[in-house]
Length: 333
Image (cartoon, rainbow, N blue to C red; front, top):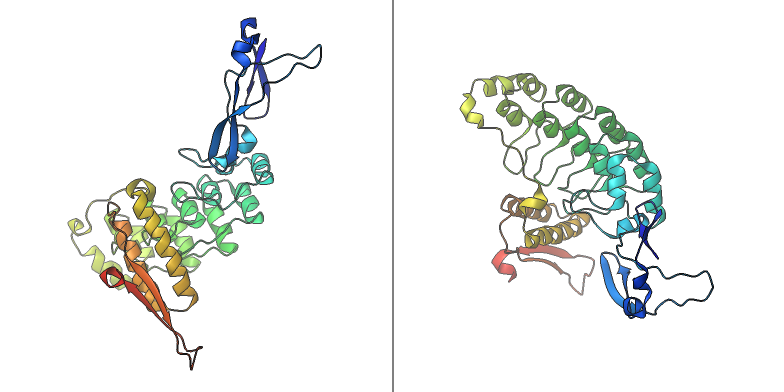
């Protein structure tokens, strides 16, 4: 008798199994692993196969794996879904297969990354174009890493220019408030920084630690870039300060590794409230939430969520004259 192994490209591999496994002792009762939903499998009892034709045989499955077309139901421990892995590799036929089987092009992995970001990071321009043509979000919610951040960080100027040409927000801010220009400065990519400035990147953006492009350039002793991202008086003032003033360069820690599950969930909730406030034009409430989100990200070990209530009131006499107020902290409890 033989057993069947399925690999990731639907090719069955037959391996010989001893005839003793043909006895009812080994085939009844029969268990099956069934995919019941996204990320869920169950072991179920199923009817024993019947021998109906003279040339039928019973095959004992000794090893089973996840079929390649079903990889999008599970998220891998590093890159993400099957579609994300395909985007990472720039494998368009494989991306087509996953999307045809229902893969979500905007699904995020444990680090909050999407397939478009991974393709941009790896320099896979054709994959970037394919994903955008199939509904990938070029811009994301506020305070999220974008494909433009990743392209600039990795030094892929052609992809960065393509994304900007397709409408990517050149001044989008990451989870810690950093811009794409700051990523170019951080990695010492002077020509890319020059191009971003020429395309209108805001040189004054600062992250939640108070650092901007000039501070990072000085911290890494990149004076040529420091001149690019500042006005002459600013550069002269910065250059006159002692090197110790800027501190030692520090590599960042991925948000998904630094934050507790409760902190990540709370950040997602606050971002949802922020979207509501932004839609209503409540800038003061948005700014207040941005500060709270930044504080939660800066202290990832914090496991106590902020209390947030969006209070909307209106008079019966003038129902259109609504008032909205954001209540946070102890007042909301």
